Image 1 (cartoon, chains in turn purple, cyan):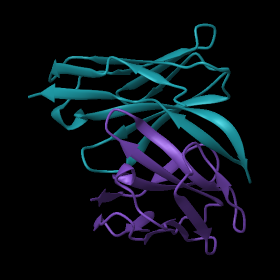
Image 2 (cartoon, one colour):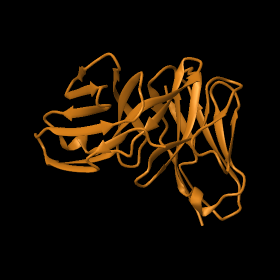
Image 3 (cartoon, chains in turn brown, yellow):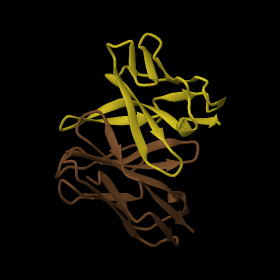
Length: 110
Length: 115
């Protein structure tokens, strides 16, 4: 089992460009999450999906949109990237309490 | 907002010594978890302790929970160079639905184990 996979691993965008971060899990988990991690800030929840067909905002949703494409896949879209969105983005999935994380996408917006 | 706050922010010890990290949180919880993050990697779940438990062991890990003080500690015994990582506590912030919970993470303790 691959667990949680994320693509791409690295990305550089110019201000105003758009992109979609992809996440997939093969553990048949109902819930999936997107976090961002900034130096000294820990992880902050952007959006989550409790089950297929539902999405909800987390702590820092502004500037992002998500799509729960099916039970396996949960994508994060930046419509118009800003330098403040430079961060490392992690996708996670869970069945109950324990969350399983992907390897992360390092995004730089110039 | 961060629910858990780890202390210290950074810790440097010699191989073979014990490492203790602390976590404080603000609101009542159902359980508390500890995660490890190696440099450049995703987080990995280490251990979960429920609110009605006071202590839990897993290999070289010992976790305590004091709900009256809203605090937890993670002890790593006989540390190894491979334990070098950042350690985060996470509390269940809210029920997400479908049996899962949102987690709120602290800012982490960066542990360096010197060979």
